[in-house]
Amino acid sequence: MSADCLFCKIAAKKIPSKIVYEDDEVFAFEDIGPQAPTHILICPRKHLGSLNEASSEDQAVLGKLQLVAAQLARKLNLLAGYRTVLNNGSGAGQSVFHLHLHLLGGRTFRWPPG
Image 1: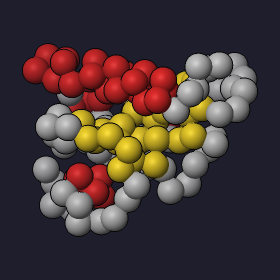
Image 2: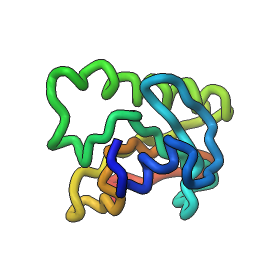
Image 3: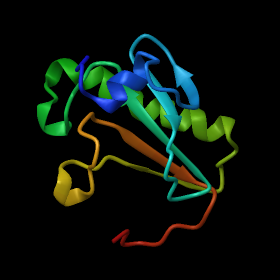
Image 4: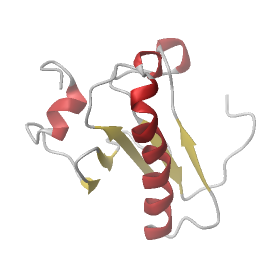
């Protein structure tokens, strides 16, 4: 954990949030600035600033982020479609530097995304 990281503080429950999933490796919570009717952020508990900091030892938790997204999508009845997004770096829109996967659903998405 990083002492000055917003998402690490959420994981430690030092900052309130609407947690929708948690286990020993991963936690997920509702985004406070949703870009879709359903917008959940899924994070590893291990602090990784971005995908660039991940290594082969993080392979399992990176896959788990996607599996948790699918589990939450089923639970939230997003079966008509949903999108998962992992922004990597400020040029891609990453604003909190703790790796996180966005689960977006509840509306139609266009391609290309932007």
